[in-house]
Length: 330
Image (cartoon, rainbow, N blue to C red):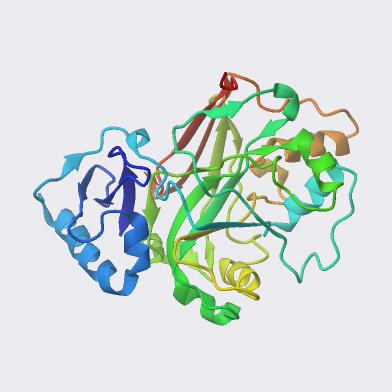
């Protein structure tokens, strides 16, 4: 099952069911007006939405419309009840820590790193990245993410898969030069982590077939900067902490509400030939090679695209964003 949210003049948009070829869609207001409404009553409503999905696969459905441009959609959840972003790729953790002169954290391989991010609102997949000052060191971070149902407090990793409803992509925008002074206060990320963007489509794990296994998506994640390939690391094998692990970690002391977004962290591989999913990694590699960082952070006018393909199909559609000058309101 593939879902999206289209604009309808409200904050939460309108839920639509998307055909498997990503060419057609139909709204289902009589079943669930929004994706959040579906997630709130998943066990009852999801089978009915599945029926619509099967009908789309079988032919024409009353009220369907053609998808000629997936950038017409909002974020699937324009405002989510929660966003817990992990850092499940150890290669990324090590490189980013080196970039700011910090040692890897204790328990690197046993205790997941997670921060609570901004979830209201999430940027649409084609929304601009508003950057007030290039000196902030704006970076993209290409990630995989999941949407959960209601997760009970104390859920164990071996049980967490039951609560994963949908899979999607995420651009976790980061202001690198604001991180060190913020972390020096000892109170975590906030100002250095502005709005993130979500992919246009969310899919059920079953839609991924054998690419979804052990709580990971086993497909490469492609990032382009101004049209040039920046990296296509594989999201599966080097994800040290699975989504099952991440969910168990964040639910250790609290329940998670339906519609919580859990991010994988920046997808990263040890093999340099696969490139990177963020600029700071490339800058660190340039330093390790004995030089100075040459790759600049994002500038006004830069374009970032993030996409994951399976059998030639863009599974989640494309995140396609430009960096624009943000002007404060008068």
